[in-house]
Amino acid sequence: SGTYDAMSVYDAIDNVGAEEVWVSGYIVGGDLSSSSASFESPFTSRTNILLGPKKKVSSRNSCISVQLMSGELRDALNLVDNPELLGRKICLEGDIVASYYGLVGIKNIVDYELF
Image (cartoon, rainbow, N blue to C red):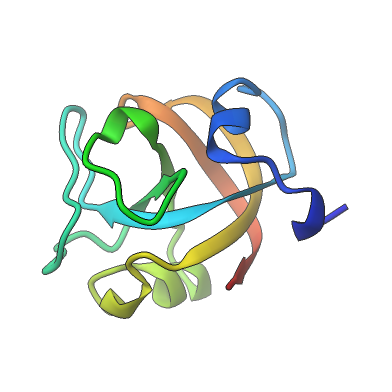
């Protein structure tokens, strides 16, 4: 298992409830609220990022939300401190939840790999 058999963003949306799975996508934005998201810097929130199926998207509806728990993960992946990550491909290992900020989301992340 691992990053080689990671699900796509679209696969993840179809697999709500899966736990400890790898999901692959692009960091396309952040600053999530229940109805909006930001796709360009400067960003203001360190607690979440938005994962898209390709490097640039304009609609949050094609994306999944990612919760960044405090600590090393948040420090490494938030777009406030790491704006250069925008557009980067990433694989995340965590649990797929039905709703985080109104989108299918990934929580409880235990590992990640940037490409």
